[in-house]
Length: 163
Image (cartoon, rainbow, N blue to C red; front, side, top):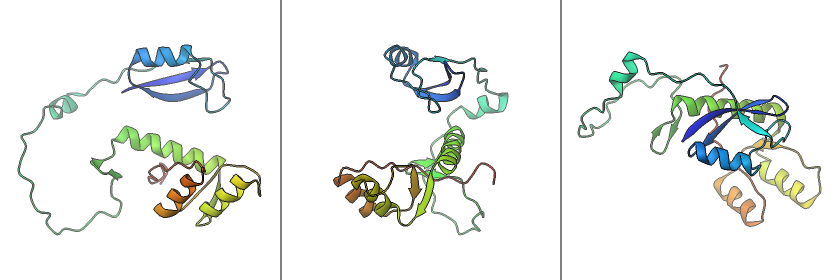
């Protein structure tokens, strides 16, 4: 995957992740990339600083020999644990992106708490005005919403960047 800093014709900046540069070029040419702020499909890559590895990071890049897994030793857990996914920790760049996503969701959407599924159904049926919402729902409720044709998305909810 390749990360690009993008800019639309209205001079809004945003990030994009693509399989390779050819994929970006093709999607941009077809107008498949749009600005999340204004919706413009006139998008180009912005100037970016290259990511250079520091000497310490280059040394760490050499794979360490694989050791047999050791059973966990009981120890005090840190108060805040790094975000994790099924395969291990979420890379720092992904955490930063998820923190930005969280901030945008909190800024632009209404928090409905445990009433998420019911509020989504009301919007789907036209009983209330459509708007961005976020909140909590169980796996069963999310599956039920999908079966009813209600599109919902789940993102890892990482701690805020500011705190």
